[in-house]
Length: 203
Image (tube, rainbow, N blue to C red; front, side, top):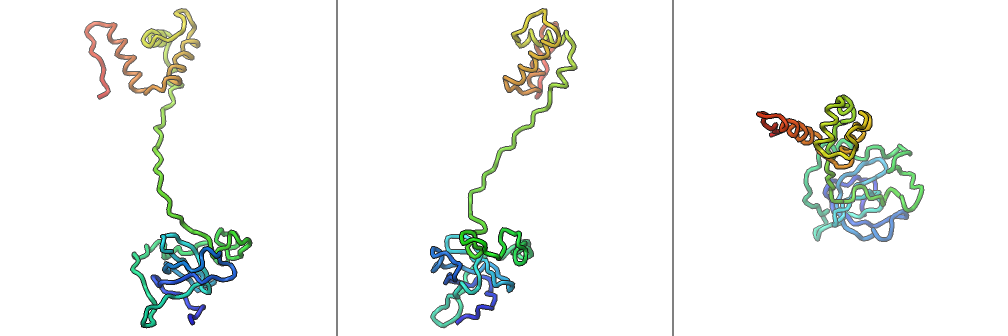
């Protein structure tokens, strides 16, 4: 019989025998020891399907070979960061998610699944658009009228600067335009009105 007080070595093959807290679905499953600690007898076990969970020592059975020696499995070396941070926030911390108080059966720490393997989703970073409202406000009335003509904005020729400015801002917000290319296009359209002026390129 195994000494339940013993901290099992890393890579030891074990079977979940269960205790009064263990869910029936976990009993009989095989895995190996990833790490363990003497305080409370908690061991981090990796099941055969790759799932990791924490189980107390008295709920584990060591699997032996025919000669009576404990079976060990080949596992990759544990990173130093995880060696130093194992079970951080557990033990005496009652506010920890992995506390040992076992307040409910469903959330019992012996059956908590620490890190379920999920595909990593890489979120595309949205390009931050510069704030153009302040820049547009600096345009004079003549420039705003040229902008209206260049992009055929639906606003009267004799409208005020405020009305023109609102129309220009609306053009940016509704059409999802690229500010730099739009400004270059605006400048080029103005330049075309003057003879002997080449177009400006952003390349």
